[in-house]
Length: 84
Image 1 (cartoon, rainbow, N blue to C red):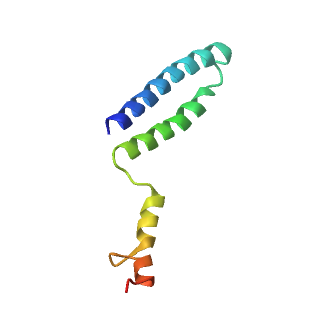
Image 2: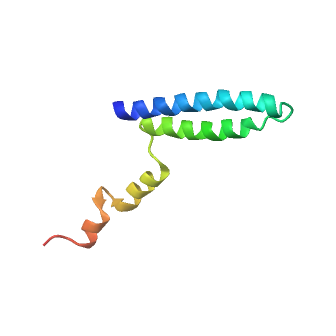
Image 3: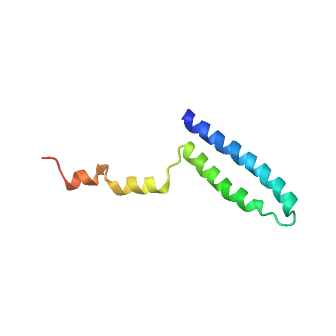
């Protein structure tokens, strides 16, 4: 968990630094067009996904895999191939 938290912190720090750089570049190059917002919101979605995984959230694929491989608490493979 500590290692995951470290990498999440790195992710947030890099996100913050890049955000500041993008705002400065955008204000110098094209202040009338806030193109940096596309990157900010897109990357923010990735940061949110990272935080969700860090806090114990399960992905849809793992829930589907769990539901599809277990029926009534038994592994489908075990039901199809009983041990004799």
